[in-house]
Amino acid sequence: MNKTLSALLSFLTTLLTPVFLILLGIRILLTPFFPELEYRMPGFPEDIYGFTQAERLKYAKVSIEYLNNDAGPEFLSNLTFDDDSPLYKDREVSHMLDVKVLIQVALKVWGGAFGVLILLGIVTKLTGSTHVFLTGARRGGWLTLILTVSLGIIASIDFWTFFAEFHHIFFEGTTWIFEYSDTLIRLFPMRLWQDAFIMEAIIVIGGGLALAFGLKPKLD
Image 1: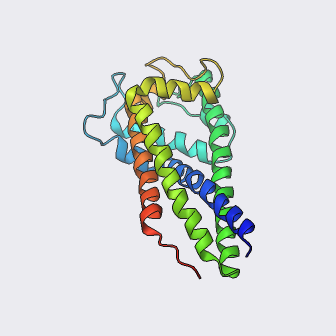
Image 2: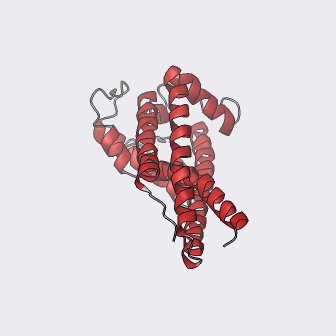
Image 3: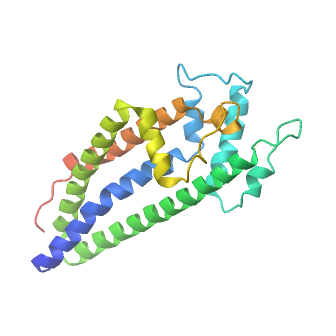
């Protein structure tokens, strides 16, 4: 394999590695495991409007299921409390649809990045240049660490501002702001998002460290 092609494959591997790891972390958080763990964390705030832990788990899991499935917004619109009143207001359903669209795009990017990384690994293996792929992945691990630590520093300075700016980038106007009494806030308070960011960082940094220090590329 010539040097130009080797450099290109290594560069692509480096760029795609943090994309894969960051979105992998998000994919892991989009499972029932996260609320099961989160609602049992010490000091996690109780719902002052009356949700029990069991109710929170029930409604949070079905909400996460919606983000992962192919159902339309009626999936949430049809959810009700025991007294048959709607679980979510129309405005909440609309925001969850926006979140679902963003999540679905992110998961497709994650799958695409994973597929391309596998392809790059196969190509370099068949051409006897596995070290090119491993070198790129190792650099990708370092790039992942740099990005994650940088974002972590920014978020730790003022998490609310970080959280708000993220939403301003991906959502229109104030469509993501709700009353404390709304179901979305009762199920997913700020503490949950802070912990989600920490867990995401742990997952991503763990992957970055494994690649940055665990890979030892050698010439084939």
